[in-house]
Image (cartoon, rainbow, N blue to C red; front, side, top):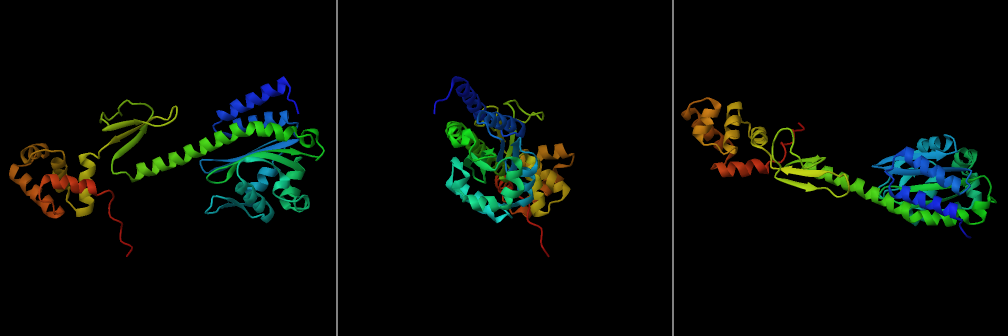
Amino acid sequence: MEIDLQSALKIADIQRRLLTFEADPETGEAILADAAELLNADAAMAAWLNEGTPLLVTWNAGPGIEEYFFRTFAGVDRDGNIRSTDPDLDNVNLTRRQMGSGVYHESAFAGRSMVENAAFHRDAFRPAGMNHVMGMTTRLAVGEAVFAMGYASADAPALAGGRTEIILNLLLPAFAHRFETLDQQARNAERLQRAIDESDMNVTVRDDQREGDSGSRAFLTLPLPGPDAGYLAISPPDAATLAARLAEHFGLTKRQTDIARCLLDGLSTKDAAVRMGISLNTARRHCEAVLNRTGASRRGELNRLARSLTAPPEPSSE
């Protein structure tokens, strides 16, 4: 089948938009609409996950398909498959995801008699004008991304003549690349946030390399991958944070916590006494009490001990 110039330009435009797609429903619906019109479909639907949230948009299909999918949604299994309370739809979804990226006619997943007798077809697809379906899909870490074209009749020229399959195969590389990239970015972002939450350091994500309002200087600032991703600013925990950890773990008094902060700031006993407004002898007694309670023999050991305390102790269940 030959593709005329006007169709080729439309295909190139859809490819370009797919490659810059940010997974927002409005843009997805617009791309779906243009692809459906190019393929002379009667209706169309698209579904994907955006950072773990299932999204579904339709074109010329009404609300029935979306309502049915969300009504029968049964969560995600340990293998990343999206499950359905409709056993026929569940089987189709499992089969399609296991087959991986590609362009498929519905006959690849189920026989026609099964499709026509299935609740998802009877209650959702057929009333929406998607009596016969061909689409492109790509497997994601959880679920998949799908763009599906629907036709009222199996004899629809674009479907029967192979135009739909040919053009979807031309769109598939851009479609699969973009959704796989977005999926990888989402998983990287999740890993990064988990690492930040578990870090013993003060870690923040900034829009640029400028220092924060507090004036504290980052120990390390790393550019994150990707355009407009920002910078990862890393600094050791400050003395106040470390002193609070010691207080939490060893039951230090308010004065002992204050003197611990002075020691962690590198102050001498004399300078600590001046900062706290107490006598030198009193400051010495507080220093000795901190070292005795924590078991540290000297100030350097106190600093290492405080840095090793990454979280307060778990509360007792009794």
